[in-house]
Length: 261
Picture 1: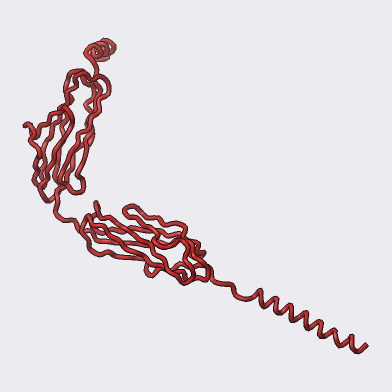
Picture 2 (picture 1 turned 180 degrees about the horizontal axis):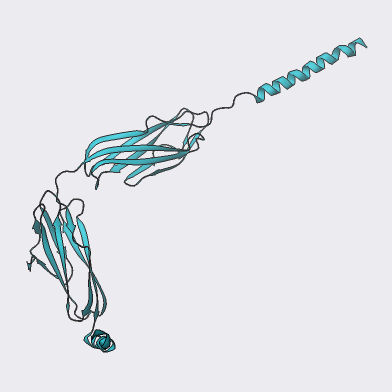
């Protein structure tokens, strides 16, 4: 009788001990989730020459206790970025994002952004930034008073004639040539001699003459300009119109002669 009574406290103590150990095991702290930490999130290239290609690698570390997964890397316009390490980064290990920026076509202060998406629950999308001060050297800079010319209604056998003002907005002499099959060119009223030279801050009048022999219906031509402007070395001006025969013109006139009085 006494023996059975003495075993009950031991059984209860055993149950309590098992429960305590079970609770202690469930209350043990879990490992930290993946965490992306960049060594720096901004890089300044400083003063650079226009046209140069710039490259930089952003370094990051997985400061968590679980594997970090890079889901996506994207950029704002004007630069490219690529993950140059593995997509999965083990705890304590590092990875790299390589950014390449072409300064061609840019001037002055420039800022571009790179976005890195990962499975870090605290910051799933990290913004990186690159900056540069792009120095533009003296150069020619071409511009037109128009990029499209609509001649309207034309007669078969006539000549589509369009005038375009070519301007040099740069600091150095501009040189250009024009090409269009079967077309003639005048510069300031005289037969063109290419390359045409335009001093800084000046402009010239270019006349394009396109014969319309055997051409009926919609007319569309593209005058190609080849220049020494480093940013706009090839440009085009669109010429358009609608060509009809003389008989068609007579028919149109007869149909609308009362309106034309």
